[in-house]
Image (cartoon, helix red, strand yellow):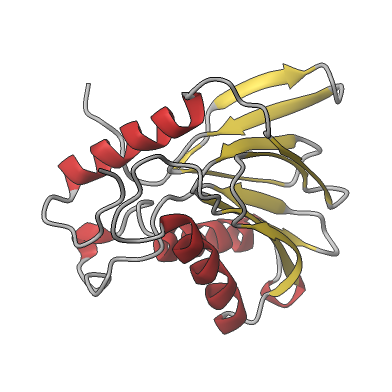
Length: 203
């Protein structure tokens, strides 16, 4: 089976008993947009998620990306992948518009960018992700109505697009390495797909 490193629609559906709601869980490199009353959930370490919605229609979506940009390679179509935040943000916005959202009504809440990975080397990826998403939304003139970025803790994010509710739980007592290992595994997939990249994430 080929490794999937490009942006893909999240497909991990389940019923969340805590919120009595249909839900979809996003992993790194995934996005999801909806006009239904459904819960979007993700867990973030150094990655960032943007929760964007049309504030009138309630059409909304979430993404989950690992790297801010292509470090100069963004013009190369081979790099049009979720490993770069630019593409992850553009595909999320475009899919929202296709579903009926209006650009002038879009607002965003952004989360993640925690410094949670051991052995971080050259670049502070969490901070770079946070800086990128803020700058991108400012450039696109999409209003940021809430943010919880950087810090040292992983986060679990619950987004209800229909009613614009977001809940963020900081995972201060995580005793396993699931989050960091997932991001390390994903980073290794990206390296295989884009060898010779300029960003060194982990030692």
